[in-house]
Image (cartoon, rainbow, N blue to C red; front, top):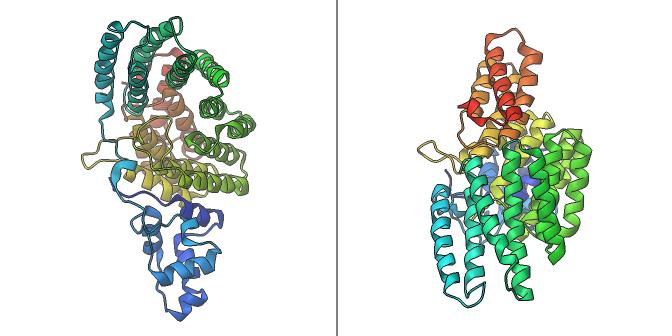
Amino acid sequence: MPDYIPNVRLRAWRNEKDLSRAQMAEQINATPIGVAERLTCDEERIRRWEAGEVRWPRTPYRLALTQLTGLEPEALGFSPNRQPGGRLIEARVVPADALRAEAELYGTMELAQQLQASDVGIGTLEALNEAVELLCRAYPVVPAATLRDRVHKRLAQINRLLAGRLTLNQHREVLVITGWLTALLGCVHYDLGEREEAETARQAAFDMGRQVGHGELMGWAHEMSAWFALVEGRYEDVVTSARMGQAVAGTSSAMVQLTLQEARGLARIGDRREADRALTRGAEVLSSLPMPDHPDHHFVFDHAKWVFYAATCYTWLADDDRAEEHARETVQMHTRPDGTSNAPMRVADAHIDLGIIHARRGDLDAAVDEGIAAFDIDRRSLTDLVNRAGDLDRVLQQRYRREALAEEFHERFVTARKALISRRPELLD
């Protein structure tokens, strides 16, 4: 797992210009400074820039980049002061331990509360915020049903505070805390195929955000609506919901996520030009945000997630070379040396993208291997998995209907679909 922060702004510029890395390298060499300095830029150098391995290219290359793009190096995502480090990609706390830490914290908080004269003691709200953060950080790898049950329990306990003695400011903060927990609950419900419960939670989170004027919380509620529409094939609604959320989200992780959801909706529709533009806007907003302390937090958008979203966008746009580049890097960024992953759901989607690409290229064995790898990942959003596996299954059925391997994958897909419809995820085990 690399320790570098991907340069998504440079990558977005190249994607929007529809250039391969080799083509971009040739154009850099052909600039006036490139010719004068006899630059030897190549595909590997572009890869290292985009991967974040090089944060500040040498002066001739910076000048050539400006001549080629019309942008200063900082506008392309470069910085002489940009700090390396794996914290963007690798969580500092194992998410499974986050549940244990949250339980211990909550127990301490309840004890402290009992010792206070008021219903909300000193430090209680800080502890609540920390507990919610731990639950949101557990989302990537903790089984959805386990997390759902824990969040339900915490919501029941926290809701009692709203009926207690609170100042106006305390009431607002508890509402925000409850809103984030409710939004997380909606996501977990949707992962489990519990559509009605997910929508109820989403609407409740939006209402709480609106009640206290919390733009980012409202933005995430709109993002959930866009996500639901994407999975359900309502692609125009994806774009509409994403743009509605952008109107309230402010400069935040929600804004980045909403812009990338818009890109995915546009990619599904087949609008390459606007999808590229949305990806670029998302990269620009992301680069203006501080580096997250906890990128494993479900409601935090990190640079590696941009690469993951771009992979699926280009898969849907049938730009196989670009899709493969992003999908392979997604797997690489989120796979530890021992083969485990800190973002298994992203990796599962990337395997589906690679399976579709192999199928289009005529390699059935590799396509099915990638698809089965997605099914074999432990932590999964069953709803997303069935939706994306359906993409691969359609390609395999169109091209290899009578092949045994295609039928093997189809049977796995049908089993997953039954597990989703019957709400029995254990069928996949």
